[in-house]
Amino acid sequence: MRINRTELADLGTFLAIARHRNFRRAGLELGVSASALSHALKSMEARLGVRLVNRTSRSVTLTAAGEDLLASLDAPFAAIGCALDLLNQHREPAKATGRIRLNVLEHASTLLLAPVLPLFHERHPRVEIDVRVSNDLLDVVDAGADAGVRYGGTVPQDMVAQRLSADLRWVVVGRPSYLERHGTPDHPRDLAAHRCLRIRLGDDSLYRWEFEREGETIALDVPGAVTLDNTQFALTLAAAGGGLAYLPEPCVGPSVARGELRIVLADWVVAGAGFHLYYPGRRQLPTGLRLLVDLIREVRPLGL
Image (tube, rainbow, N blue to C red; front, side, top):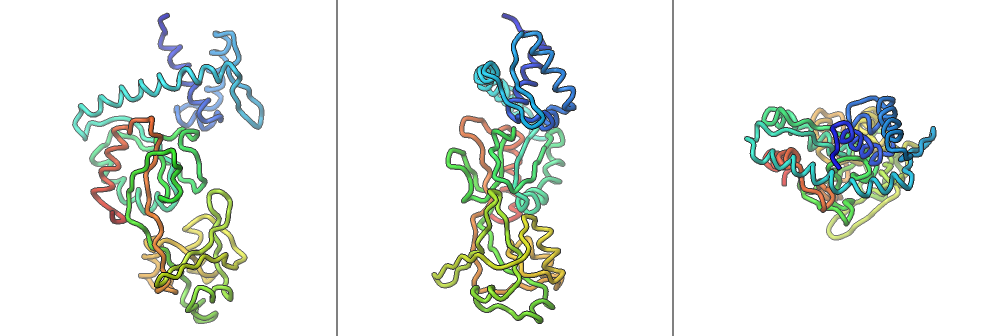
């Protein structure tokens, strides 16, 4: 049975909806509106004479027929994508084309990607990069991404991981006037008497601040009235005297250099796992993504 261009486009539309289980996100991936996507799916279902997707105001799920179609199409379309991507390897690097979809942590976006992307686009102007910044521990496959970037200790075991940075030191910082008013902690246990900006992780748990000195390790559930998951918010609040913040040292470097923040407990600094790229083992790394990884390792914005 021969398949025409319209039918092939419809199958690609269905795959995007099946991956995201969300018309808006699938539309963003394909560059069309959610309503256009819904219309295309209805036309496809009418032509096939079978319902593929159950839609309500709250959820998008696949019917049994939709699940069967997804299982049949996933591998062939992945193979087609790999075959097309192989053509990039026969082009000069500057002529590489394609689109990279990444899911990255906030820290990775500012510390790892931002210093590298301007140079990347100079070298590879035809490669598009779609970055979703989120501290939620999303499944890159379900999110429709080619790969993700997380701290090494949080990469799922069933994923291929590649290190992109050296380990990062985490430090405690506060506004000098705050420290003059409330005192400077000499030991992590002294944090019990301070206002700390607590950290919410991607799985909704609270992060215990970690410290290490001469073989002694401490993890504390610090006190504080404010809980957040955004670095810029933490920096702004700490610089305003709102409390002590616990952040990667590269994040606080500029504020410390300007005198807005001061590092405390400097002899209790712990080195956390560096950033890692991760992706499903069954997928071939797209050429554009491979070029980006090569450039990150060349520039080494966080060492390696």
